[in-house]
Length: 190
Image (cartoon, rainbow, N blue to C red; front, side):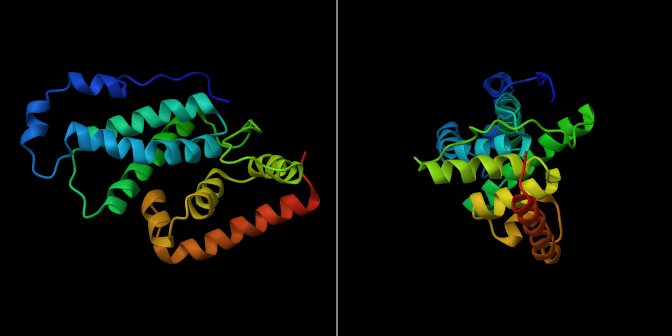
C-alpha cells in the first residue's frame, strides 16, 4: 500500500493561481459553477477512487489533485456528461501515475467498509464483503471498468473515454472482467 503521498498543490491552493487569464477564457466555469459541479460529482468520483485504490486517504488525495488539474485545464465542454467524463479521466490518470511511481499494481489492501450507499441486510453485508475481497484479485483496469460500468452506470463510450481505450474493446474487456470476478466469487475468496 502506498504511504501518504502529497501533491505539490491542493485544490484550495487553486485560488492562488493567476485567475485573470482564466476569467477571460470563453466557456470557463465560474467559481459558483465549479462548486455546483463539485457538489454533483465529488461523491461518485470518490467512491470510484476508493474502490479502485482500496485506500480512503489515497482516494481523497487523488480526488483533490483531479479537481485541481480539472480546474487548471480550463477547457470548454460540449455537455455535462463530457465535463464529467473528462474529470473521471483526469482522476484515473492521476491514480495510474501514483501507481506507476510507487510500483503499486497488485497487492492492494481493501477496506471492507468502502463505500456504503444504503442500509443492507445480513445477507447483503456478506455479499458486499465477498465482493470487496474479490475485487483485490482483479487487475486495476478490471476494477476500474467494473466500477464505472456497474456502480457509476457509465456507457461503453464513457468508459472508453475515461480509461483511454477504444470503445469497440470495452465490451470484450468487461466480459473478461465479469468472468474473472465470477470465477473468484465462485471458488470463494479469502
